[in-house]
Length: 188
Image (cartoon, rainbow, N blue to C red):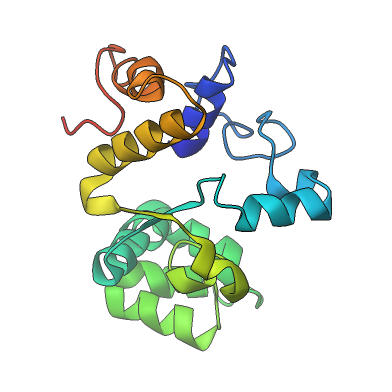
């Protein structure tokens, strides 16, 4: 959803698309600018200057691993786990994805035994290089996603000299949900 938000803020007409293979996640197709697009000197400034907001959203680890199991192993017969963790040949039509799909314990066993590191269940502290962790100046939480997203957009609005509610009002307060009338991350 944050990639959709960024695409919306860039005024891309197809910002709401999220089910096509390339949008919004494929960096070659989504129109977003990533840190690696910048020169090293500019990237270091973005990562360290107090004039930039560096945000991370974190989730309770137990809730996060359960969500990863439900979304990536229990759904679609463990196809995601099969594609990302199972490097062995399929034996009797049974893969490690099938094992992960069978139970939460099976999922944990596959992740551990295959050393399957994935951003959906890996340690959140590994999401950003340790050297730059002290420069994170905004921490949001999944359990209060809407409120923290509003705080983030309001903070960025202040830093760019806009009206306090400008980014929230323009991009977060409405335009979301099935009818386009909800705020971002509204709970139905």
